[in-house]
Length: 283
Ligand code: ZN
Image (cartoon, rainbow, N blue to C red; front, top):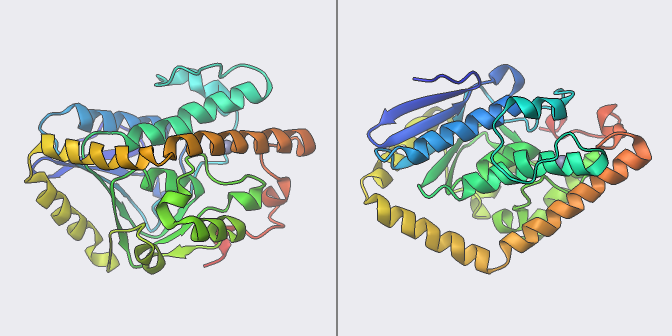
């Protein structure tokens, strides 16, 4: 059952919804439509009292290649979709519109999904690059296929990290810096060792393993699950996560403004010309 173009909405187990990114021909690159359809699917699952656990999966060999950089004139497309934040100003000049768009679509949506009260599980295979992390990291649990690879290559583009800057919380301070400085992939095994991933399983068993875990959680009382999630999230936020996130987002916007001033583009054109290494070409 799905009335979305870019995601599927499945109910594979009692009280379990599985939302599936469904643009495999683009490696599930995130355009504006996919982000809003994903948000609507999350809302549907959150608002359905029969649903206890939400799985986020992806069709094709790769979970997500990040934001769809081919989407041009994206500012104008914002008017086509029901925005969920209050910052607005998508048609304004200069940095204001760019910040508005990223605050709404990137930081805003990822943070919103992170705070969905019900347990969420990311089911991840293949490559997860930059903006792809912003779909995986907001989930409560992450199950990875043994072929999963995670990278944030934004420094290569002249930008200091993806907009939902959760890196230090996900892999620790040392690895966060290496990940950003090098743009190299973090393997599923390393991600597991660092505590970013809950389980690594053979690729052929990924969906079944994830659904079994989801079904087990769905046997528990929903209100207690919600309270447990709230307690852990609040503990993390008490350590300054939200403040750090806002600061990182401001630095991210500074880099876009810098690139626009110096290069006339939001990202360093060396990346666009392919003269700098891209994470996609590395593994
Ligand atoms: Zn950005």
